[in-house]
Length: 101
Image (cartoon, rainbow, N blue to C red; front, side, top):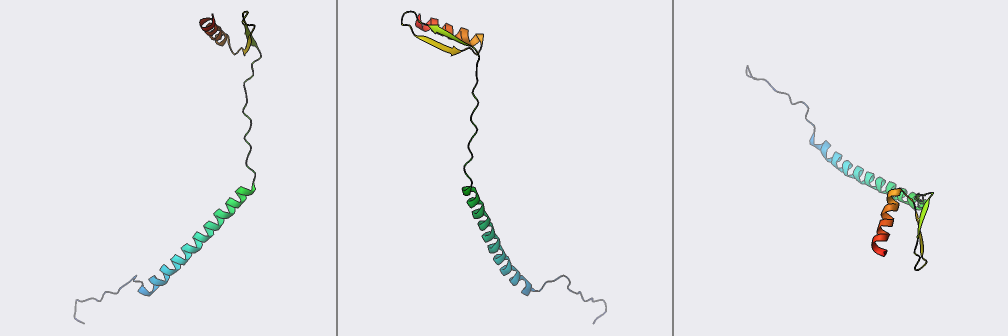
């Protein structure tokens, strides 16, 4: 060997033969994971179908203690409405007077 020349050792080099089994293992592993996930989804769906559908809670309705009525003397019709507020009653009576008198 001539003076001044150094032999460089190759480090951290993987042999090419290790790459091919890794790729085939990776594909097989991916297929196994996908099958497992599909089985889990199917089991979850079966459990969901086995449970009865949840019944929604009934909606609460407002309840007003007082009501007001309007009677038509000509026809004898009477209409009763919940007294939500004085403002609501004045608006209702104003509409009656505007359209029916």
